[in-house]
Each structure stands twice: as structure tokens, then as C-alpha cells.
Image 1 (cartoon, rainbow, N blue to C red):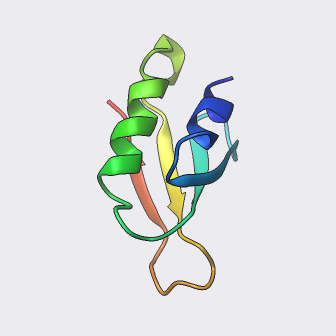
Image 2 (cartoon, rainbow, N blue to C red):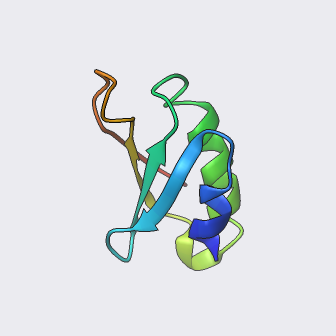
Length: 74
């Protein structure tokens, strides 16, 4: 449920769980990768107590020269 809500965010192309504590978010673009999507995704995830410390793996589109980044909700 939480992953589908994150996937519906404007900046996300999709979101899937790679592990119990890591949510991979494939981005529509590499712009704003650190602020907008992280804040929006964490706002959704922290609604669920068990997902409060989820690690986010932010993957930009493959055609962009932007590295994969990791952030953690708190």
C-alpha cells in the first residue's frame, strides 16, 4: 500500500520494495532528487509506524548522468 502511494507521486515513475527496509523509487527525472521526492515519500511512509526508518534508494532515469542516491526517513 505505501509503495503504491509513493509511486503515485508526481516525481516518481514507480516504487518497489527491494528488501524489507529499502524502497527503490525510480524517478521521472534527476532534478530535485534530494528534496521534493524524499520529503513527500517520507511523509507517506512515516504514517506507518513500521516504515518510519525506511531507506530510500533513489534511481534517476537511465539516460541521465545522475548517481543513485540513498536517504533514510526518520
